[in-house]
Image 1: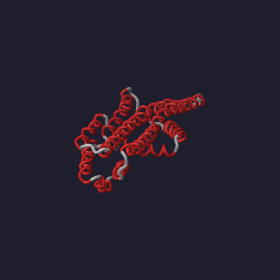
Image 2: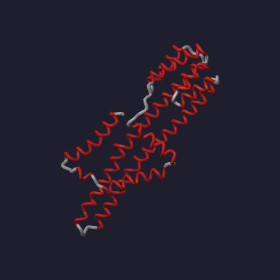
Image 3: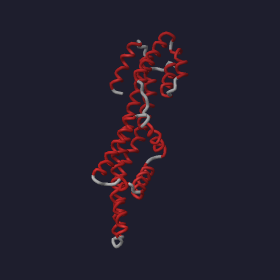
Image 4: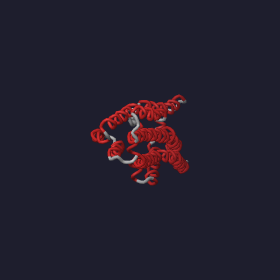
Length: 248
């Protein structure tokens, strides 16, 4: 679990709530059910309307990466690919069959299958890079869902504010109803802007960074498999792949 991400979220929300209390405000003043229903419900409705179901489902699956990011283990992967190259040099490409059978990552397993089948390096690159690009674009589109939510929530918050003011204007003769209407008006705006800047935008950008990191790690695997196919020396492969440590 990524404790830094949790700490960041806590600090952000604690700063808003703590600042409100330092100014003499009460925590209960920020808790407003109608405002929450308007902002959260309206934002979700707009995003569901905008987003294809497959992309929406992928965005929900990616959400766990915020707290449980994928472990790239680049140095360990470089050592593993280097060992594969030694096996290929000693036993031939067919010697990688047992390794392929024990490989858990589907993308790497496909690359090993192409390698064992003695596919040409340019064919291996074309197949794997096409899949890599498709996966990355799909994941980036899914992460964009949260950026869309960040765009909608402040506007929905303004709608909530207007609704609250309408309630206030319609009950000027009854002072007992003015308070709830004013509270809904201001709290809905806070919810909309706060969720956009403290939750939706950070989640979108964090997922984008993780997706790029995973794609770079897979690109390293592609380069390693190509180097094996080209018959490079294991030491040369290790040097070739070490450059990815600077960008992942």
